[in-house]
Length: 445
Ligand code: XUL
Ligand code: CO
Image (tube, rainbow, N blue to C red; front, side, top):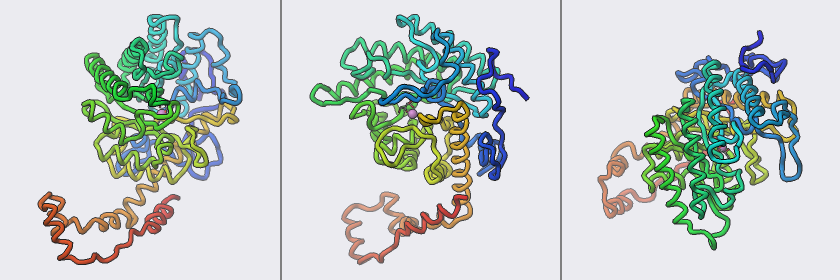
């Protein structure tokens, strides 16, 4: 049955219907093998667990260009010359895609969705015109906005940073964009608003007053929060850490650095973190480590889903297909409170040589299936294996007696020291890492 998803008349993804769940034995590349949105796992449907979202920039603005050559992808929405007409066509294609894929959310930057005009006012008017259409399409399709954001890194004026630029006038342009993007997010009922640092960082300390730049950033984020709250935004502000690229030193290096920043500038009631796998690995961490760190600080917000290439140190934004990453991520989330008001946004792009229109579907389907398998594996590990008991047992010396008294803060340092003499040399206890790893393998099916 043809879907009524477009406001324009054109169907962009011809020959592709709504993607259905066909089970693990299906040989249809355009079907889910594991992601069954209504299947209940650990008390929630898969749809509720993941809150999947499509990233506008990669799927509808990406061309496959790289430093060695131009774009390879010839997509119908790119063929229109007039920038506003092209933006509207792209929006048609995007909502057709979201609906056929069956994801509940999408995310965008201001510049993905609408073109810049000749001045601030014209640019904001363009955005408003497109947002009105997006609003209508959301209502018609039921697809919602997980978050909006402003692109504060592409325009050449931001070459020395946007909010942390040494030139105050540049900062005011960042404010114009953030204000307009926040207004758009509020109008579309977005659950979150994201700040990714873009060019907020530096190349050389010789020309950089780091303290002053960070103070500007802290103050700006306070003002953005105040404006958002006054304007009725009830969602969560998110900061997305990334250690490098485009700057050499990015201020929002990793979860721990951003947690410290959030607390230093008094943002902890309104701001949380949006965590991306490829950014975690660039920082020398695993995804699970970064997510667990944010959860432990009570600042976990949302996820950008992708993976890097283990052989290089770039942000390659590949679709997450690694079952180990998926399983370890889902273990952390199932042990915590899940994605909450956040979701899983595919900040991922098809490879430069994956040039068929259907490849955008195939990338998303593969990653949704990988995460569904990760969820099933994690659920098995937590409910059927010995792993949770083994982990609990590792810490059992703190569950009673002196260990429990220590946890309750009842010992001074010299009292603890005396206990060492009482106990003598502790018996060696194996960490059993290989056993834990083998259990993970056992449940990835
Ligand atoms: C860049 C990146 C961004 C943010 C949104 O590496 O991840 O696309 O997710 O600005
Ligand atoms: Co991202």
